[in-house]
Length: 297
Ligand code: GUN
Image 1: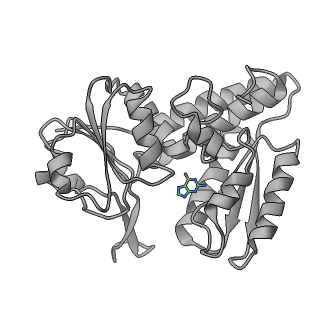
Image 2 (image 1 turned 180 degrees about the horizontal axis):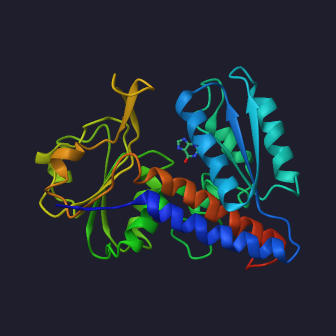
């Protein structure tokens, strides 16, 4: 029987800690932190994620702004909005929810985001500083995973961590964080990896971020493995009002008896991305207010 890694509870704890901090700041006459979210188009999961991010701001007492664009917005118009957000003194941090429509280059958009306001940790400056001590903001999801490992006292030093997925927002930064500050030996696998099971079976800690339900089956892991499932997949389910259920990338029911620790989906990594986002927003706010060491140039 594995210990369930309860991301929902940890993120609630973090939110309560931040809410207390906001109350204290406001009682001193300061304004609360302010996070903006840019949402382009009508993607269902993106709308849900952004709604949850705005809700988290309300819970902790931050101000939030939702800036919506139609799917056919031009890249130039989006860049203009980003430049406006960079200059807006009332905004401490902002995110541009991904994915973006195909006619817009994520790379070009990310290049315009001021790294001090980049609370998602996606900009080249923040990505380049992942393994450095004085970074501005760490990428939100990998940061959330590291926080879960820390709060469950799961050591990474000297362990073999296998990351499945090499996305810019999860797999790649996850590998750097585990090998750098985490002092782990890291293998990054992906869609072109031959004999995936050969690597996943060697994992002391397995992080899966692919977006494919049941990609990892029980025969692909060793006894005692720590499983971090980053996948959030909508699978058809007639018993649900929404018509779908959320599943991760691992076969939870079959793997759970073999694992020492495992994250559920939902309620594992997902809430931690949001917790990281609001932690990064607090750091950006404090730097802007001169309440903490300023963020890196
Ligand atoms: N799309 C999926 N995950 C994320 C995330 O963490 N941040 C943003 N901005 N978009 C996403």
